[in-house]
Image (cartoon, rainbow, N blue to C red):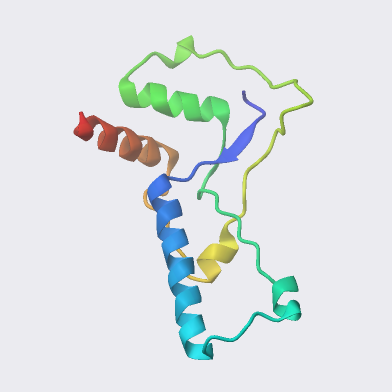
Length: 126
């Protein structure tokens, strides 16, 4: 669909972010001792969005996969999502993660680079 947007992120990056957050929480706990979380602290928890670095629509994702495998992109049919049950834009702003230095920079940073990375790692496992 040309009107459904996502921010693609690799599983490896998600794992790196989660690892960094857990490590930061463990270090913070060590520095503060083993104190109980207060009600005020519980109410001021931070929410992080974990999306990829590039906002793309689903047609662009399909085209990147076609390009990677050498398929003719003319075979793809551009269409718009019309279902009221499907959100059109679930892209995420992950700038707070980057600001807090969780996960480092996205690698790779481009959609073609991500497709190359994902499929080259699965091709090596065969």
